[in-house]
Length: 253
Image (cartoon, rainbow, N blue to C red; front, side, top):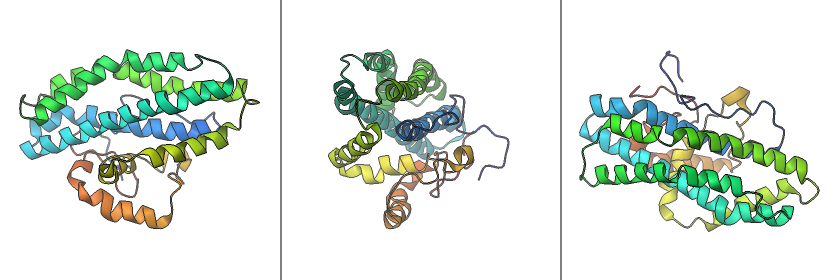
């Protein structure tokens, strides 16, 4: 658990508060978005010192950790554009309802591509890792991304308020999430994306409102903790939380 005064992964890009929300669909999206924010915060806070103080192995591991964040965000937004947003527009009976959210995806697309390309070059040995350069790349898109992750929650709340009579949105959301999980066929997700999510989810956030997430059987949670996470444990040392989903000190802050 974090006991020092060092910066942690709740900034510099602020997490989304659940304080005024009672809508389950929006609250679950808050959890997902805050995981994405904790990861980019952990990357942003450590990127310079990894290059200055770290060994080559530290840098290699950090680059893989940072690349997985891009993979997770890209998958999240692709799923929204191909499955979630079309369904929302169809069920609400309002074509173009989610266009503003898609436009925000496009607004930070180029910055995200620069992020991806830079890490690919470093990983391939084509370019030496430079923490300051990497931080500047993140600066080029992170504010827009943060605004999008915040605005999208407001969109879900507004959707429920203005189109509550069009569908059982909570039931639809759970069904859609189940379909998304079933459609995820990448066998590497179990030891890459899943641990990335678990080790950046803080169960104690805002008095533990997300302590019961993810809603998985106890035996699956043990599999994650004792198999999935240890497989690539060298990457998760940069994560904001431990295997028990409790916040911990970032090693390169």
